[in-house]
Length: 145
Image: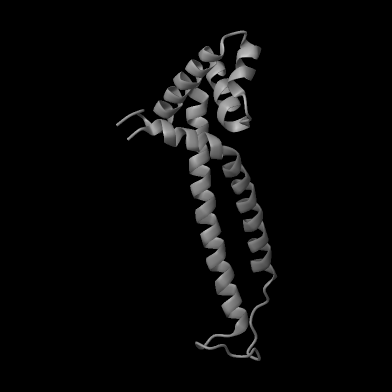
């Protein structure tokens, strides 16, 4: 298996993953607020199919939603932690090259790097290939299996 393609996918999706973490945190805060706002069910509430009442049903649904959201947030945080650990291992040049090619994107990242670093476009592509190998090794533990 070639982990370079998986590494490229991780790089391209990192901004969406960071946004997803913020959304999960906001959703958890919203669910917590809803849970705290539910009033204790009184004996006059209308029964629901299944033997409970509407307030209990809503309360149980909120608890299930909160548990699911917490699980998703932990999964996202684990992925971000792995990414940040692998990213910290890279040199500044490798980080800049990978950012330019995969995170920022655009039509001519190699030309932008070549202009900024005063090198040839082929050198920028070679640096990209080396940086991907370094990132894949740091993120997955190997490059090609």
